[in-house]
Amino acid sequence: MNSNTILNPIQFHLTVTRLCYELIENHDDFSNSAIIGLQPRGIYLVKRLKKELLSILGDVKIPVGTLDITFYRDDFRRRETPIAANKTEIDFIIEGKNVILVDDVFYTGRSIRAGLDAMLAFGRPKQVEMLTLIERKYSRQFPLQPDYIGKSVDSLTSQRVEVEWEEINGKDLVKLYTIDE
Image (tube, rainbow, N blue to C red; front, side, top):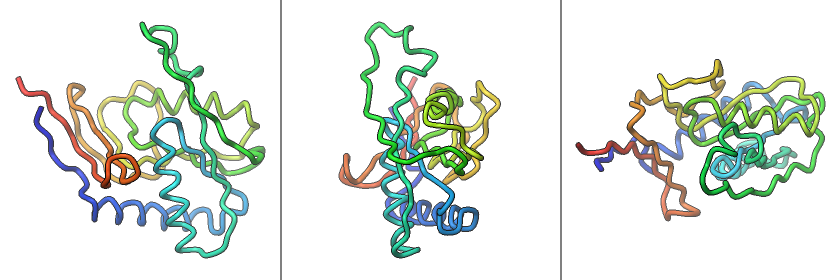
């Protein structure tokens, strides 16, 4: 497989910082907003966003949670080996709040559709927005569009976008993999 770097560690950090400033523009002090990361990979972006937001805003309360979408996925029963469930951690009420759903890569829209279904078990938000680090264009299967985009990538269905996190892989990096023929 060939790989091209989409975001190097410096670009990665700048992109997350820019996304935080965009959130601040629209959500001010987050007094009526909450950020929810989709399991399994959106949680790393949520943690990074919260850390950066607190460094910018200082001592504010930002409700942050994680949401397991395993049983809401439309391919849950189609796999030979079941998907392992993750832990949902939402210790706040989302009723009437502005909720930002977060995932690392936005591709077909299926994960977000599942996230919307799963989130409704915790109440009815006032508004829902979507934030993604990488948007893969040209592959939508649902009429969904992220509100906050770190970087858009034109990619083929045969390609794969991989987000590496310092916490897991030792450095922040985003790569686009192409299968050699």
